[in-house]
Amino acid sequence: MSGLRTAMPDASGARHPMVAAVAAGGQGLAGAAELSETDFVALARFIHEATGIHLPPGKRLLMQTRLAKRLRACGLPNFAAYRDLIESGRDGEEIGRMISALTTNVTRFRREPHHFDDLARNVLPGLAAAAREGRRVRLWSAGCATGEEPYTLAFEVLRLCPEAARLDLRILATDLDPEAIARAEAGIYPEATLEPLDAALRRQFFRPAPGAPGRWQVIEAARALIRFRVLNLIGDWPFSGGFDVIMCRNVVIYFDAATQDRLWQRFATLQRRAGDRLYIGHSESLSAAARAFYRADGTGYTRRSGAGAKLPDQTGEN
Ligand SMILES: C[S@@+](CC[C@H](N)C(=O)[O-])C[C@H]1O[C@@H](n2cnc3c(N)ncnc32)[C@H](O)[C@@H]1O
Image (cartoon, rainbow, N blue to C red; front, top):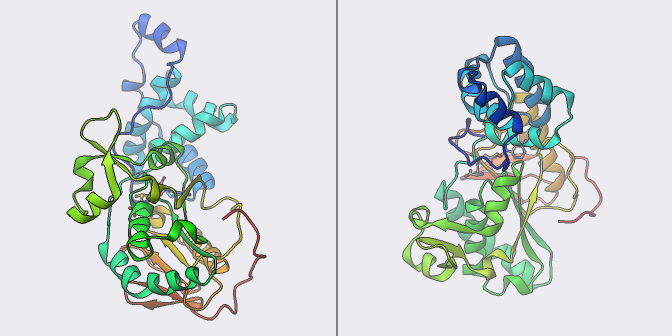
């Protein structure tokens, strides 16, 4: 995950009745609340255990700013009460909203374009040929945020293999944040976000979004290639089938080293074919242990021989 995100719409809907009550009483609310060191440490520990995200002491003010909105939405007078709500586990949805408020979904179409160029030139032609011969082909955008990354993958796939939907070739796109996944699934974007795409791509893959002037929707043929799912990368994975390509970019930079290392090695168990490809963000790097499974190769990493990683059965939903 790359940093804590900028403003995100409050998805909580109704405000807690206490908000109105306290406000009517004229008491200062969360705007003035301060996040104590103790509450910060406790919440940071909770988030680390739930998501792998490591928030060092320097992030206290940032956490205070981001969670002030959650305090207001819950109608709580201070962070001690908010921490109690979270730690008690009595409001699972609020835990999700807190995590949403603290993660960043910053992304864009064709971000780090050299990865997509490499795929189109060196990887997808072979995968398209394999799919045409009847092989199952899977790509995974892990930490896909609002969808620009998996849609860029879909555009590259369809340019090379327009008949992909009729083959066993699919893209799995997952993120921790259900709000981001809902937006990704809708596939509707403001015109300005299409800027990294050339005119031919825009014409081929977007249509004006119905009832939303100035916004564009990804065409059905590209959306149909992608299965969007909420998934915590440090939790259980409901699949164990192989992936020819995994893209996990700008997701782990706030994970601690041990969590990153475990994730890379789990990826290796799902990439069992020599030649499978892994792309990570430019500021991320594979651990020494993971390099036993992957070798650096141009802009990405290539799976060495499948030996070494413990390989699960080829079952699961992907
Ligand atoms: C900065 S975005 C990167 C999006 C895209 N991969 C890119 O490079 O443009 C990071 C995403 O990682 C997600 N994320 C953070 N921790 C996660 C976890 N434990 N499991 C799954 N997704 C996570 C966040 O919700 C966020 O949407």
